[in-house]
Image 1 (tube, rainbow, N blue to C red):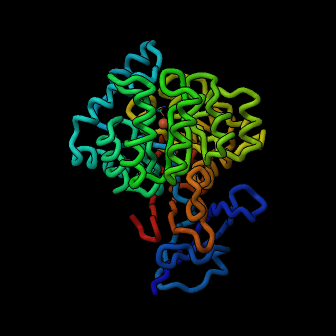
Image 2 (image 1 turned 90 degrees about the vertical axis):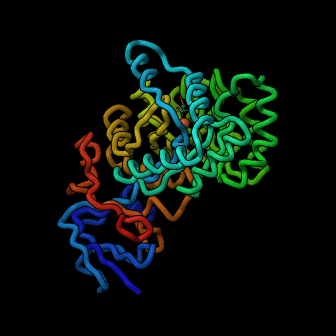
Amino acid sequence: MTTTVITNIGQLVTNDPEADDLLGIVVDAALVIERSTVAWVGRAADAPAADAQIDAGGRAVVPGFVDSHSHLVFAGDRSAEFAARMAGESYAAGGIRTTVAATRAATDEQLTSHVARLVDEMRRQGTTTVEIKSGYGLTVHDEARSLAVARQFTEETTYLGAHVVPEGATPEEYVALVTGPMLDACAPHARWVDAFCETGAFDADQSRAVLEAGTAAGLRGRLHANQLGPGPGVRLACELGLTAVDHCTYLAEEDIAALAESGTIATLLPGVEFSTRQPYPDGRRLVEAGVRVALATDCNPGSCFTSSIPLCVALAVREMGMTPAEALHAVTAGGAAALAREDVGILVPGGRADLLLLDAPSYVHLAYRPGVPLVAATWVGGRPV
Ligand code: NIG
Ligand code: FE
């Protein structure tokens, strides 16, 4: 059996929940990989012998990023909509329909190669686990094939038939489809069910119906909520005990209290606020209220077309009052919690060996050096990629 030791790690972020500090930092560290998992972590001076050795040169090693929210299965281009927004137009949920038309017209091969390109782009920026949603098909056939495409890249696939009501359907007819035949066709390809609970998309009762039908079919629930304005979505997610509720841009005190009490993860998506010129969610307030926070890209063609977790870290620190440690935790352990995963986002014995060597002495550089590609090497399941 082959083992590899990465030694001379100046700063190792383990996210060990048993540690005294948030990130479970070990300095002058080493980490041993055995097959696909982490076999040992500790001080380099104490490291066991291994078959192969890699010298980190005093640089930092962190868990691979877990991007718990993306919409990568789509076709078409909405850069003109972005340009119009930057010239003063506001973002509206209806833009989704433009992508729906392009996605329906694309072949499976075109969709697959587009997802492959984006997953590769994410990988080069340190993402080692990604969640991918459907939501630009909005027919039984197109939602099911979107999920089948996504499944080629990740286990973390999310059925988002309830993204928006497509042209030609009434909301009642469409919710019946999403909770009936579309769910039957999609559930075999999905782990999660999601809905867009927002003015212009689905209201609380419709979102509840979608989530209840999805969970009855064996899927786990997550929700898009409080992105474009205040609303009932966050409280609905907490009431239903969903794993995560995503966006959380416009929160009332009672929403924050419900999040803190329920343990539902608040996934903040600051690339959306960056790309829509909306106010950022108050990350500091959530952390101080005891809410469990994740950060993710929301990579999609409309509200935010970035694949970069490091950008999200920089925005969370600069614009949302989070410390560099809180932001890194939110894109690793936080993302893992938002996907109910215990094997990723953490570098402790028994966890998956998904890790990043940074071209930096400290993880702080992820926020301190915005826009700079700092991922020097990546291991996924113990293999360098
Ligand atoms: O997460 N909020 C809903 N869906 C996407 C945007 C989709 C689009 O504009 O194409 C989001 O922001
Ligand atoms: Fe989204």
